[in-house]
Amino acid sequence: MSWPSFLRRKSPGDALERQLAELQRAAEFHPTPSSVAREMLELAEVGPNDVLYDVGSGDGRIPILAAQEFGCRAVGIEIDPKLFRYSMERVAELGLEERVSFQQQDFFKADFRPATVVTLYLLSSVNDQLRPRLAAHLRPGARLVVLDYAIPGWRPEKTMAVKSLADVQYTLFLYRRPAIPTNGTGTAASDVKAQAC
Ligand SMILES: C[S@@+](CC[C@H](N)C(=O)[O-])C[C@H]1O[C@@H](n2cnc3c(N)ncnc32)[C@H](O)[C@@H]1O
Image (tube, rainbow, N blue to C red):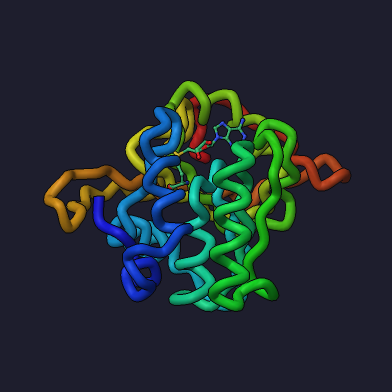
C-alpha cells in the first residue's frame, strides 16, 4: 500500500505514522490506496458543494483527501476509537477542522441524510445490511462509490477497473439514488431489491 502524499510530506518518524502502522496490522482496517481513493472521488465527480460521508472511515484518508483536493465538506464514521482519534489528530494537524469531521459510532446507527456522496469499502454482506438505511436516508441524486464489493440488489450506473500504484487491481461501482417520490417524511417510498439504485 502506498502512503498518501500528505502523510509522506511529514517526517517518517512521526509518532502518528508509527501509530497508524500498528493499527494497520489489525485485521479489520484495510485502507484504500490513496491513488484509488482519488479515482473514487473523480468517478463521483465530487466538488465544493458536496458533503461526502465515508462509512467506516479507517484512518480518515478519504474524507481528508476529499476536502483537500476536491474542496468539499466531509464526514467519516468510524467505530474504532484509535482510528477515530488518529483521524481527528490528522485533521487538526492539517488545519481542516472546518471542513472535515469524524463521528465515532456504529455506521448502522448513523444519520446519512446530509450526504450527497457516500464512499464504501466494506464487504457486500455489510453493504447489504446498510442498504435499507442508505435507501431511506439518501436524497435523490446522491452518489455512492463502492470499492470492490458491490451493493447486492442495486444496479451500478458505472463499473470501472482501476490499478493502484502497486499494480493491484480494484473495481469501482458508481450508484446514484433515483429521483423517486418520497412518502412525505423524506424517506424514499420504495427500496425494491434488484431495481436500479
Ligand atoms: C476496509 S476499512 C475501510 C477504511 C476506509 N474507508 C478506507 O477506504 O481507507 C473498514 C473500516 O470500517 C470500520 N468499521 C467496521 N465496522 C464498523 C461499524 N459498525 N461502524 C463504524 N465503522 C466500522 C473498521 O474499523 C474499518 O476502519
